[in-house]
Image 1 (tube, one colour):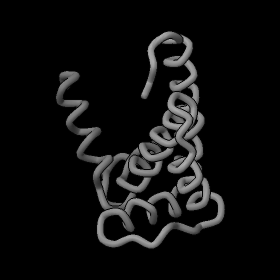
Image 2 (tube, rainbow, N blue to C red):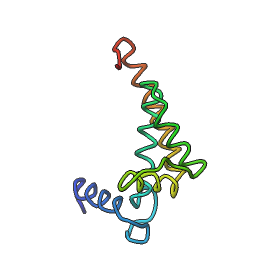
Image 3 (cartoon, rainbow, N blue to C red):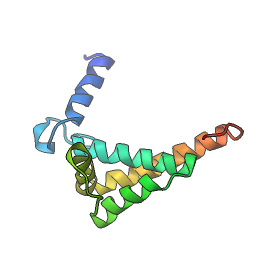
Image 4 (cartoon, one colour):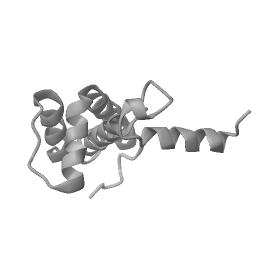
Length: 114
């Protein structure tokens, strides 16, 4: 039986693989495009609901729905391409981030966020 730490390390290693075929595990968050798309979606949803910042949300939505992304170089371009590959993870992340943003706003109504 593996420890919880070993299971977490194995999950993180598989989530960073370049392709789904590169990992033994198949399913949700099994390679980097899925984890990048979900992470950016969560960040965009949270920023939009908790802070009222719509910029990242519009970029993620544009990349996921229309397959368009702002021109970028290097790592930034690869992240937008990950969203284009896995749009459902990005949009699911937006919903998750929005729920988290609403909960944070509800739990901290008198704390200014800016």
